Length: 157
Image (cartoon, rainbow, N blue to C red; front, top):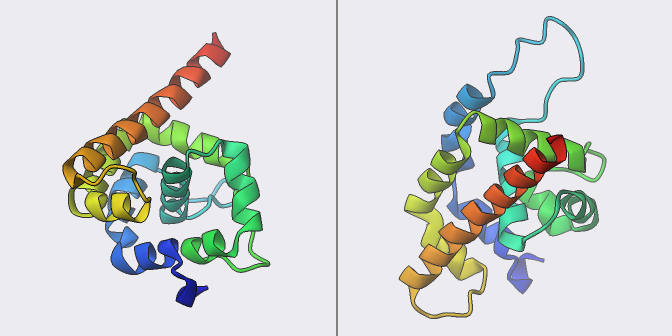
């Protein structure tokens, strides 16, 4: 796969997702686990899932399916064939939690600063102007997250 130009592999080598861990941990504020229950999925793993989802314009259900189906997604996420994959509800809950904490825009803006142009070039955008593509990427990410948040609010009403 590497020789065939796996874009996620190149993306993974270029982006240090661990720099986002402190912000993710702060926004999520998980308990220490003393009350029991299943431990949450790793915050960086879940953030990477949001990146895959946003870059490919995937629903939560489709994201779950494609992570299970595509080795390139699993490799990018650091998952093995026997590892547990977050289901659609878990992806949705993570995004909602990050949105409610007010962290999602900040994280994507922080991501966009050093890596936005790289990601856009990896996503095979149609336009050739990197500034236009960067702006379109930002708009797409924010629109996707806003639509999902508003859909959730409508379901609750």
